[in-house]
Image (tube, rainbow, N blue to C red; front, side, top):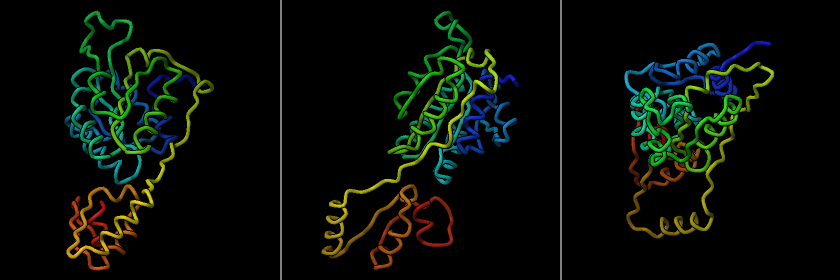
Length: 248
């Protein structure tokens, strides 16, 4: 049986969940996770700053309809992701940050770059957690990915103390779950009827859209604007059709 460390366990769970690209800045103690991702065939995009890594991963996740992933080192590496987590949560973009932290056995004793990183992340996130044992890494990574895309998408932070990578486990003991499902948004039928009634009776209607792609609303909105109703959309980039420009 092959022995693997906690970093490789995390990478295997990410691969099983359909994550093929990750963003971040190489730093300890998360080097083990980045090495594991490379070994599993996950493309690692090394960025110049953790904040830009978060913005890149958020956009990647929104367009791919899966969690964007960032790997950050301890202390200032992780705190640099707080802005990106806040923006992702407020903008409904799925983002998971895996952040390294000091060994739990030295916490409170002035460890290198020691900080209460879960507390830093919590105000800007949907969900936060800390790995408490190596064998739970696959379970917690699976939960983090699912939380990022369930309901209203947003930012999620999972903290990896340095001790998470110290223990190695055999492949027989590692259990990786599959890609978490994403529930499609469903509007209240009564509200739909109410809006349709207002549009039907309005003299000069104007429709405003921003995040329509996540709801797979392209075809419905295409039919709506095809009726001649003017609309204002937030443009994220060039596209071949009005609705693609509207939704992406």
